[in-house]
Image 1 (cartoon, rainbow, N blue to C red):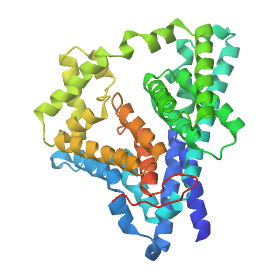
Image 2: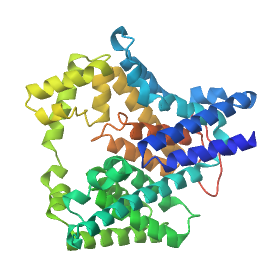
Image 3: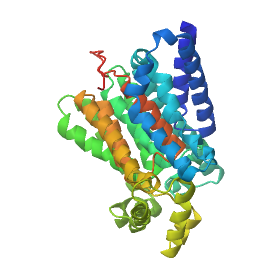
Length: 400
């Protein structure tokens, strides 16, 4: 059975390693992990604590309950296909929490898997970029051209720049607090991750990085001087490269007035809020929300938003329109609980991770895309295992 446990852990590491990249491969590896974990659960039934899944795991699996309701809203039995991307919200905590002590003891390895996954993903993207530029005989000044940043930069790895950016920020936060990582390798990895953030050209991850840098500068300067130095070096290096070879496209994208207030995004928020106002208690469900949203987009002249089936681009509004006030309440309570619990436990890594997730959800519907759902399910479940996360103190803390 110990061999099965090792296989289970290895499958988890590979699932997290591939989270930043190829979605189909990542989904297959996550399915392998869940299958091995459930098999182990059956063999170790008496030694497992199933109540931990129900008690500890509610901040994760409650979102599956919302998805279940929204899928079969109105009594229709045709809603199973809506649940396809939400199963991890119940299966991941079921795979992790009954064996919480084992996974708590391997928290660092999980974060290492994500960090190296981000590194490999960025290397794949940069290699493809180099091949294209050399093949087209492009000058170095085109490094940040519109064809080489954002979605076009990450397409080769089948990933979205905003989600990859969130994973990169998470990896940087891990590297800052980790005491066991080789310092020289940490410097190189951190610089690569920071340059990657710039190439992704996604405002929210860059904002999160700068926000946490300022936080670290103000609150942790005395304890993490050389980590602050690495980040400052990376910021200066990225800024210098951007000043030297940054394109007009990148300057307009990153420093336009819309970086503060995007009028088009606010207008789309208003559409989702109108749907909530018309269906305030239980929302309209998955089967109706996009059609209603597109109808309102067309009424207001937002043809592009309708043609691309844009979601709310705000997770709170997404739940308000889909699940009504009940969904918005569950969303706020769950994420608020995780953030406050991490602060109570004095776990700075997870506190910043949950804060970053909440901030990212202001402009993205992270719990609508598979990458965001799996990221939340994996790392929230890992946190709920109860491991404090201090390299000098291994203490199991119960959430309630």
